Structure formats: C-alpha cells, structure tokens
Image (cartoon, rainbow, N blue to C red):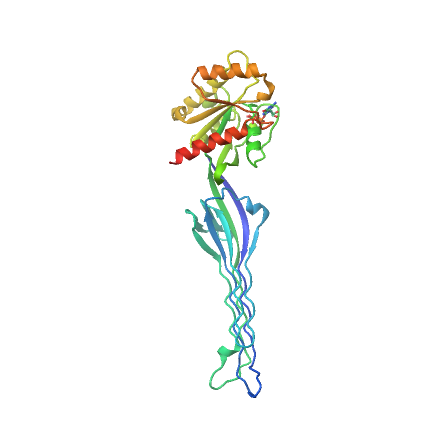
Length: 333
Ligand SMILES: Nc1nc2c(ncn2[C@@H]2O[C@H](COP(=O)(O)OP(=O)(O)OP(=O)(O)O)[C@@H](O)[C@H]2O)c(=O)[nH]1
Ligand SMILES: [Mg+2]
C-alpha cells in the first residue's frame, strides 16, 4: 500500500565569516606587517537517509534548517571557525525536489545516502592575503560569501507492511489509533473511514512496521460495492493482513462475517488467500468469558488463528505487537 507523504522546507547554509584587517603590534617591531586572518567557511546543509525513520513527521515541527555562519577572522592570523554543518535525517525512500524548478535533486535509496543541498559560503580572506611587494600594508579584506538558500520539497512513498481489513464498524480505526500515533476518525457507525490511513507501530528491538487502515469492506466489495473496493488494491502489497472482526456483533454462526469478507478478498485477488493473516476478535470487553471462548473455539475448529483484543481498552494489544514482531522478523530472514 503506497502513500505519498510530503513536506516543504527551507534550507540556508551558513555565511562565510569576514576576513580581518589587522596589523602586527609588538614591542620592538614598530611597523608589523598585516596579520588579519581569514573568515571561517559557513556550514553546509546536508540531507541523509536513515532506515529508522518512516515518516516525514519531523517536518511538521520544523520547516527551516539553517546551518551556522563561519566566524570572522581575527588578528594574529587567526582564522575564523568553520560554521557547523546541519544534517537533516530523512527516511530511506525520500526524494527531494527544488520547489522553484520542480527538478528532482536527489533520490535517497539507501541508508547513509547523503547529499549537500545548500553549500556554506566561503570565508573572506584576511588582509595577510592581500599583501604584495608593492602594497605591504593592505587595508582590505574580503567579506564572507553568503551561504546558499532555497525551498525544497520532500516526498516519501510509504509501503505498508500490514493491512487492516474488516467490515465497517469492526474497530479497525480504533485499533490503528491505539497502536500508533495516527489519529483516524472513529465513530459508532459504519463507513467512518473514507480514505486509507497509515500509522507507524513501534515493535520490540527498535523495529517498527507500517499499518494501513482502509475503509470497511462489505459483501460485493470486489465488484465495487461500498467504499472499500477502491482501496483493496492497496492491501495487495502488504505482507500481513489483520482481519478485524466485531466479536460482539455475531448473529448466527460467528464464522459468517469472516467468510463474507474473505470471499470478497479472494474474488478480488486470489493471491490474498495465502497471505499471512491473523483474525482479531475485537470488542472482547463486550463479551462474557464464556461467549468469547465459544467464538474462539468455533474459529479454532475451522483451523483459523485468532487473538482476542479490545482495540478500545487496549487489552491484548501487547500480544498483538509481539505477534507482529515475530512474523515480521521471521519474514525478513
Ligand atoms: N466496546 C468496544 N467498542 C469498540 C472497540 N473498538 C472499537 N469500538 C467502537 O466501535 C465503533 C467503530 O469503531 P471504528 O474504529 O470507527 O470502526 P472501523 O472498523 O474503523 O469502521 P469503518 O471506518 O466504518 O470501517 C466505535 O464506536 C468504537 O468506539 C472495543 O474494543 N470495544
Ligand atoms: Mg475506520
């Protein structure tokens, strides 16, 4: 499932420090020569890709990245200090464009890919450098050059690892909001989610995965009924499906809800039948222990793996994350 996350930001490299005009003044040396040092170079702004980031969230909080200016040169031939560079860390898979021209500047495909997006200004030369045989006491020095500045756009195509599927009102969005920082709309009626939503779920050992919540699916979805069909193609690329079922909403055979939806998935793309999946019996808080046990046994008897959770209260969600960690790590081997 691919989404484009994007942000606009401004980068400014540091200006070069001014060169210094100064003359040596020492006892017993009446007319010391020039000794003004050069200004330091301004810091540059870099962009570097890291795998541990998965979103452009940081750009929501900061849109200006300004590297330090070089300091001015001083007497006694002391050069100004270099301005500190600024490195902006971004997720692997980001591309950066120049806002003005629309030109793609960089495509960050691997961890450690690093590019300079604004070059620091060169420091000005101190008066020492202007001394010649005819002008031994130059009173001139360069100003530092200004650092580059420009507006950039960053775009990131996110691929979800896990897809949440289920009938409308099953609690998919509630689940996403409880396991990630995403904030999808939740409401006690069907078809609340109109557009797919993504969330990053943090797992053990610093691992994380991206979970996609899509609008609820209904019978006939594969033929275009309801909203969900439009987004089914997105779950095609996920590695794991979490089939969320409203455990409290059974009338008749608890497997019916499950089967309706699985049939739609299979009709849409029969490869989805073999996709790793877990059935989440949600809203377990609304069931008595006996009811829950009965439902779970029905699924088990059909050879299906279930986990009972309450997306709302959070019960069972640690277990769900452990399960995800295990499967995702396993799959990477
Ligand atoms: N009691 C209880 N209510 C829950 C639980 N999880 C979700 N709900 C409620 O169920 C209703 C539907 O939740 P949503 O998360 O919007 O359901 P959804 O599956 O995203 O629905 P669509 O977007 O329409 O497909 C809301 O009123 C939630 O508060 C739960 O674990 N226990
Ligand atoms: Mg929803």
